[in-house]
Length: 298
Image (cartoon, rainbow, N blue to C red; front, side, top):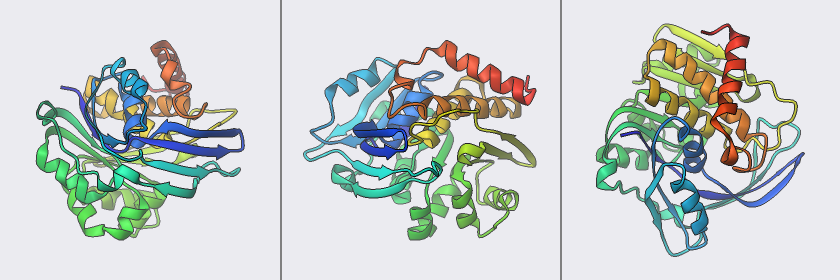
């Protein structure tokens, strides 16, 4: 049955020290799907405007990504404009044009409603709750951000109590729990409902907390980062794609961390999907093997 992802499809206009891209394809559901499809079949739920290229719909379909959950509405597609300075860990938002995404109300097609894995990408927690009422999933994962933690804390906590895997960066985790120490914060988050917490730490890697077990992976060593936009969603796509294919034992959760790290490292080497869109699976395997050798992980 694969993975159902609910999130944004967008245009990103991004400026970084390496250059810039205007209205490049982006959005959490897009980045997640482009990473996850290497391991699993993916179904997308999202909304686009009349200006979203039909060629991209075909591009997704050609990669075993089901697009029947994407609705096209009158108006323009969600557009984000931002830039990064030398600190590539922090995006500076210049403008956010929600457009058709402002009225997004997720409606899951019937064949999406029973699935192996559901990923609730970073959207309003009240919309995430709507999705949970429509979907019967064996495993549920959720991503969120500081805006929802501060603006809708009760709704967010309700959703978190119903999911199995929670993705956050370290600042969001501290904000959610009120704990400064990441380990203490992760342990507190585990008491909110999830059995697994994944902490995204940008250029410093990622940390996995599962019950009393803990695993850390550094980021893949990169000489040049072009655009970090979408790295977190690509990490989640690689991670969840892996466990959808191989299971969620402690051993496979650790390997999923490696898969997520590898996929996100390819995304940041170019703008948008310029690299990951033409990536052969063999290169992913090679990068994962390098990571495993660094960590002595068999």
